[in-house]
Structure formats: structure tokens, C-alpha cells
Length: 467
Image 1 (cartoon, helix red, strand yellow):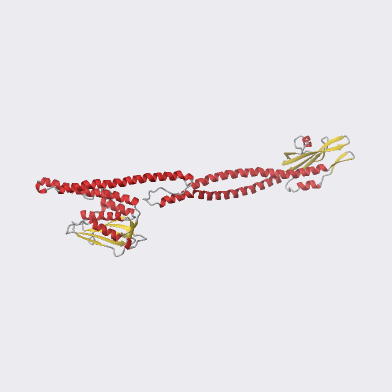
Image 2 (cartoon, rainbow, N blue to C red):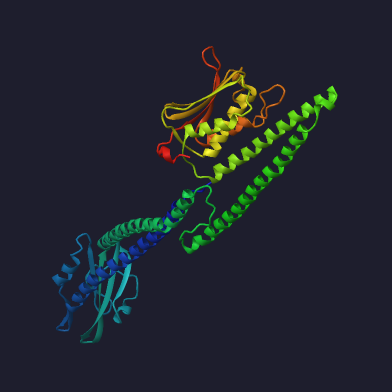
């Protein structure tokens, strides 16, 4: 199943984008606010200086006089990096004092209603100007004098930059804190998903009951879908179990009846050709019964590993039961069979019925196709593994065929008499229990042997509790 990254990383990536856009918007707003705040602060100083200058305009002996107040420039002098320009215009438009070429580029008469601020350029520098007017009583009548005060903008720009930097640092810190808080919130919000995954992973294979997990409303459809699937799977499993049970009964019963009917035939009444045919029927019927049993046992083993909880079992006891089940009462009296248990109690984690069936298949195969005078079953310890070894005095299986005989329906006999399911069942059981099936080559000092090696249980049960 292909993945597109974790849900946490996707959420955090999207939240980071949102926070970055928000931070950019806040920083832009802070920049505009800083400029407005700097302009307002310095415009007040500029206006205060201009008002002080207008207060210094007096009429003496019918003439307009102006004395530049020192306090007017003390206010503007707070901005050490800026230069100051001024111009006093008498009624009639004549420059009374100051820079005669200082001009705002606008109609100065508009300043009679309220002070007028403007941006401009003077002597190659950007400036901010304010123009105010004052009405004076002159011998010829009422006249309007104007005062223009200009200041360069380096200080206000520096103040705007400083305010913007401080706001940027604050926004960055708050964004990082918000991102960290969002990460914690997302982790906490996604915790139900992790709990749901843990609840599913802890369930035993045979547990097909619906999930009973408290989840948020957004996960309820997902849990409902899982429960619906589990219910359908449980129904299918029950149908499969019923099918296997019915198949075992419906197939084994006719085969038993067929063998019984064949045994009732009187061979003495048959010609030699009929006797040969009868013997073939008996042999094929026996092979069919054995093959059917193996198929059903194979299905049983697969089903049990999907539905049975594995527990520590005593290897000596399982091997002994398998030995008794596999050796028939009518065994050839010339065949010597023996069972040797391990001196120490060995326990492996597994399913006793499946493990016993695996050992039975190996012993049965040795009886049918290997042993001629001797068959031995031995349980012993090999390091961290418990081993059940079945050896016989037969020719054994060629090493080139070892990997093939573990495959289903592979026959190691030239006449095709062996179905090959016995070793396949044993190999699947050993693999499911994290072990394996091993072969030992026949030599002058040791017979051919097949071994089931399983890891020993780290937590064995008491021997008295073993079944």
C-alpha cells in the first residue's frame, strides 16, 4: 500500500503555510503602522516648531518683525541625523527670512484654515514640510503671514525601521510558539488514531468481535467500516469451518465404505487378472484415503494458525503422542521402532494439535518410504532450539530433492505414489512457529534423518500444566 507521508506532517505543513502567510501579513501591517506612527510623532514636533515660529511674528512701528526662537529648533534637534529648513513669508509673498527657494509646491493660502503637511525634495534630500498661516494687523489692514518648516526624513525612517524590526521579532517568536502549540495540539488530536491502530494490532488472529474503541466522531465511519468488515470476515470463516467439517465427513465416509466393500470381495473366486485389478483398487483406495486425510489436515493446520492462540507446549509430550499415533498396531514385527525423549523438559511456543500433526506426517513418510528394519524418533536440545528427529535405515532423500519435497504435491517417488503433502504440512507448521525443517545426509555412522527445529520458549509453563 503506497503512502503519501504521515497525517501529522501533512497537517503541520499546511499549518506552517497558514502561519507563514499570517506572519507576512502581520509584518506588512506592522510596517505600515510603524511608518504612520513615526510620521505622526515627527509631524507633531514639526508642527510644534512651526507654531513657536508663528508666535515670534510681531508688528512694531507698523513693520512686521520676526525673532527666531531657540526653542523651536530644540524640538527638531531631538532628531540628530536630520537637517532643518524654514522660511517666513510676509503678507504680499515677500520672504521675510529663511531659505527663499524653500517651496512646498502647493497653494500656501490653503494653510489659513489648518496646517498643511507635504512631502517633497529640497537640496537633493527628501523632506517633510508643514505650512501654517497667521493673521496680523498691519497699518494697511489685516494680512496673512506664512511659516514653512521642513525637516529631512532620516530619523523618522530609522524609527519606522526599528519599530518594524521589533514587530517582526515579536511576530516570529509568536509564530514559533504557535507552531509548537499546534504540533502538540495535532499530536493530541491524532492520539485516537494511534489508539485505534494499537487496538487493532493487539487483537488476536482469532478475535473477530467488533471493535469497541472510543473515537472522535470523524473516526466513527472508519470504525464502523472495520466492524462491518470483521462481521463479514467472521461469517466467511464460519462458512469455511463448516465446509471443512462437512467435507471431512462427506469424503471420509464414502472412502471408508469403499474400503469396506473392497475387503468383502472374495479373492478366491476371482481369476488371476481380477485379483491384480482388485489389488490395484485396494492400493488406490488406500492412497486416496491417505491423500484426502492429508488435504483435510493441511486445511485444518492453516485454519488453526489463523484462529488459535499459541501457548508453550512440552516438546517431549507432543512428540510422544505423535509417535503413538503414527505407529500402527499392525506394524511389521521385523521393524524396530524406538522413541527417545530429551532428559530435560523442553518447551516451544506453538499449537499442540498442529505440531503433533506435523510430526505424524514425518513419521508416516519414514514408515512408508524409508524404514526397512529400523525407525527412531528422538527429542533433543540444539542450543536455543528444540529438535524432534526422525531417522530410518532407508536410502534417504537425495540432497538435490530436499527443497523440492517441501513443495505441495511434489513426489519424490518415481511411481508417483507419494502425494508430497506430508513434508509440506510439516514445513508450514515449522515455519509458522519460527522454526524450520532440516535434513541430515546418510553416512556410515549416522542414518538419514529429518528434523523439526523450533525455538525454545522463553517462558515455559510448569510441566504439570502441560497437556
